[in-house]
Length: 326
Ligand code: NAD
Ligand code: UDP
Image 1 (cartoon, rainbow, N blue to C red):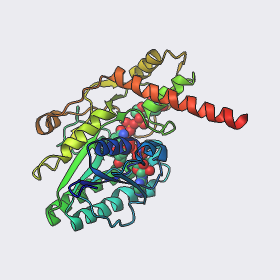
Image 2: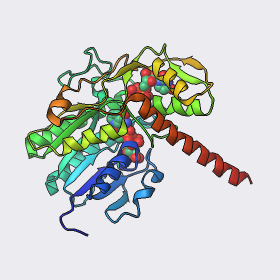
Image 3: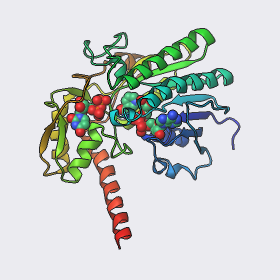
């Protein structure tokens, strides 16, 4: 193996975003170490990379220290869907906070650059719209989303303290709703829920009146933005919003999914979960000027890609069930 290969650690590398990131880094010739405890990640997501000489997977929980030698760290380890991060809220906070301390300690020891996958959830239910990076947010510290929101906010604080106190080279990206192939089919996020429901011909579950808004970014665009941020010089720390500013009501997403999949599903209304933000949309002026980045994939195109993935997945699982039954 070449001694000049960049050694890159991706925590949460077997998850939705992490597996796409590992794939891109492997393709670009980096020496990639994927670390994951498989809480929401799946080995299937990285199975196609296991034969690559510049890819390695390690089962490890980031709440425990990790001793490896790397040049760059992408810290993505943390369940991201409300259903998953609320399943064990204490562990969610530990993963964000202790995980950040461990990965920052590693970066400090080996002199690595480190990028934190932060989130639009640091803005909570925002009173500034669209959200700019200088907006400080409106988070309910006591609610069911706080384990995630406050964990991520504390991780940002830790990143900036390690930057000021220990001169660690940090990058903080605030990711807005991202979707695409390899989302977990049962993770409860809106895009996977709607597509899987449509493909199964089930009712589409719209929470509240569906007039709450989100802006959806296709995974390839997001990974591109994240890698551009990592490639910036030490003066760029972020936080930088990366997301697609095309904002739509969730109800419109349901209608689009029905149209694009040709499903016969009906829309049914369910209660809006507590603290569900009423609107969310990134201001990406900073990403445009600092990273020269903006999203390229149109929503319908991305939804079709995601639907094709879930269609294959459902067909495979039907086939497996058939084999077992037979
Ligand atoms: P995901 O759940 O698919 O991936 C998270 C990965 O982290 C999983 O593979 C999981 O097994 C792993 N993990 C969880 N706890 C861990 C621990 N203690 N130790 C090691 N690994 C652990 O979610 P995702 O959508 O790929 O999100 C990746 C990152 O991006 C997360 O940090 C998330 O907060 C952030 N993010 C994602 C979105 C989005 O829309 N997808 C939006 C904002 C922020
Ligand atoms: N949502 C919905 N039906 C679902 C799942 C989610 O209407 O089956 C709504 C949810 O209430 C929220 C939006 O879709 O308003 C996005 O939810 P998601 O869990 O994907 O991410 P969030 O942006 O809330 O973190």
